[in-house]
Amino acid sequence: MFGLTILDLALILTLLSYLIYGLRNGFLVTLGGIAGFAAGAVAAFVSVPIVSDLVDDPGWRLTAIIATAVLLMMLGHGLGTMIGRRIRSVVKISPLRLADRVVGGGVNLAVSGLVMSMLAFSISALGVPFVSQQLADSKVIGFIDGVTPTPLKTSMAQLRSAVIGDGIPTLFEGVGGRAVPVPDASTDTPPLNKAAASVLKIAGTAYQCGQNQTGTGFVVSPGRVVTNAHVVAGVPEPVVEVPGGGALPGRVVYFDSRHDLAVLAVDGLRAAPLPLGRDLPAGSPAAFAGYPHGGPFQSKPATVRDITTVLVPDIYGNNAAAEDVYRLAGDVQPGNSGGPLLTTGGQVAGVVFAKSTSEPSLGFAITMNDLGPVAAKAPGLGDAVSPGQCIKK
Image (cartoon, rainbow, N blue to C red; front, side):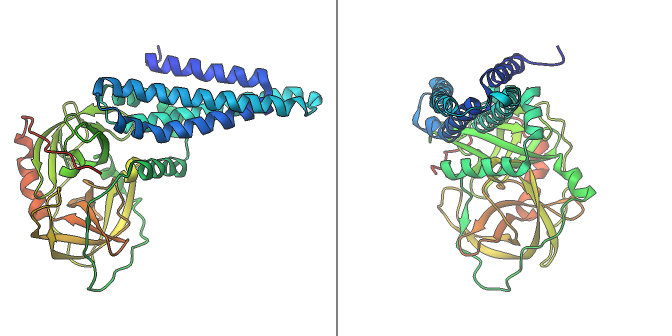
């Protein structure tokens, strides 16, 4: 019916129950319940990755996460409601009874929807294929996500990233040479907007290390996605989230820990491949696209500082070797890993993979010299390979 899933029907019933609850109890009691519920929801949002790390058995992990989230929200709601009733008992609001009930219902509905969005985001970031697909296919979650302000979603992602310690490889490099300011150019252009449809969020669970990993990837040929090896290291079943909704399971078909590149095969992926360009010279305007902190899509401007030779270790921090890499003036964050460095015309010129420890606005990207051969062989890669060992955060 209307393309609704069982999850959608359950969410609608939940939202209706909170609307009715707010109408019956009025604003003050509702406000107390909401405050407690919101506090419990924030605790649940933060606890999801922590519980995931603590429970080693994959079969019990999701159950423990859901049980913890429900318990925290119920406790918070109960305590908040109790406080709200006590406040209401000493406040005389009889002349405003109708308005009190209407406002209570509306506020309760809005906050419960926001809480659903928070939990859906945190759970989908676990990268559990079946769960991520159900959440991505939910029209209710999609609607709530669409009306949630982007700054709020970005803040939620940053909070989660801070709690679980999402990281990006760092290089002690950047001192010396002419400093280049981060550009303030617009990335809202037709070529870059078109490219955005082929830039995907990648999430998964590295069970060996008991941790969740998120990053970015982009389509290089039909059904083939390039990302960083460190994004999928130790992840047996990465999940690829498509812009506009939908999540698909992927399998690692190429894994190079030395050059930090991986290729995923994603059956049923319809996103078009991005055109490949050439290395950009120093001073060139560029952009990099991705999902910083595992949050909403962002396209940010950058300037190519230069292509220079840097000692780069493999993804496990060993065997440093001289590599030619881009140095970029740009606000590279965790979650941008594996995303494309784009020309202003929307062509791929590299892959973002690290940031500097010495300059906060200096990022690094893999050049076409390393990316080109991998992208060329991607269409012929179909057999799953080992995703290597995970990297403990």
